[in-house]
Image: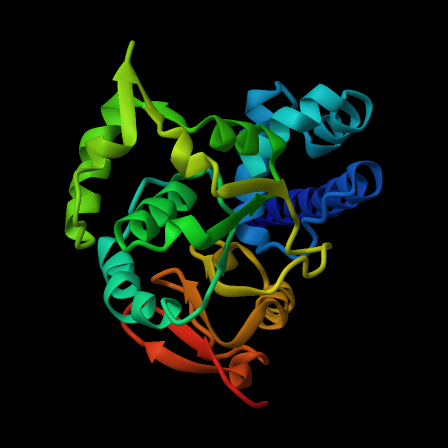
Length: 285
């Protein structure tokens, strides 16, 4: 019996893997979203959740709906892209930017910053607030990019649940803030609306690290908790884009569980702050 169960489970796993690959390929060919380089274990878990969400017994059924119902794909995209974030997430990272990176950014007459994988915009607004506090926002343009148009709309609106503000405020204070977070939003009807003066310095735009190319030269790239969802090849592609985008001695910030250690692109960077995963592009390669 155990052998039969094991054989049945193995056959089911092979069938799931085949349907998984076919669905990923279908998404790429129909909608031009490329998830083929994403870490498969995480993506499979999200697909299983999506099957229940859309009432599909198999991935083949989900594929049929995704291909023929664009609104289903739009909803599926929310399952496939990570949207968990908060303002000034990991405050020591922002403190390191404030204390170690900002003094060097001051030497540029104008600044461009790229927030890659911006989700609902929390990090982009955090960066804008930090730069405002340090007197640099007036000469800065922040590019905030993501592949999910729904989250980009939310990000551009700059509206968050007021219940989240207490945690945002604690993070902001721990980042070495020189002002109160309440200076940057208006609260009403259970919502916190961020100040337009911050939005004026942020461009929210669709961009895929899997398929798109470099679009600007920047002094700072912050891409945190995104690469952990990519396989090694896609990680290297993304890091190549960041290297090409950064000016000489520009800065790259990664997430706390991400590193350049095993990347083919490691030689393009020096470690600037090992603890906070901040790297600096080398002057000459």
